[in-house]
Length: 100
Image 1: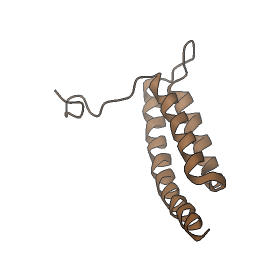
Image 2 (image 1 turned 45 degrees about the vertical axis):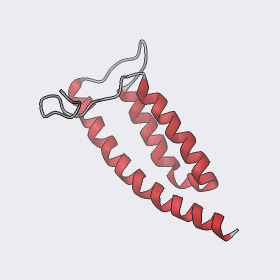
Image 3 (image 1 turned 60 degrees about the vertical axis):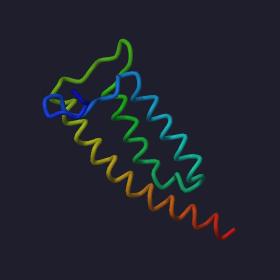
């Protein structure tokens, strides 16, 4: 059975992988955008808070299932907005580099 079958839904990253993926994203944003990263700083902070709430780490308190679902839905919206802004900033960063 594949990870996206209707019975199981999409595969989810293990709890310990989500924070590492977020750190990787933050490093990528830094390297790709440089000073333009300030344009996404509030969304990146919101994303980090959401990941921390969903993946509190060893000894942390997990959200109740209903709250987890709500947080995932909220983070999906944050990610959609972040994606749009990152694409625009990346185009701008590339245009700036081409103009140098």
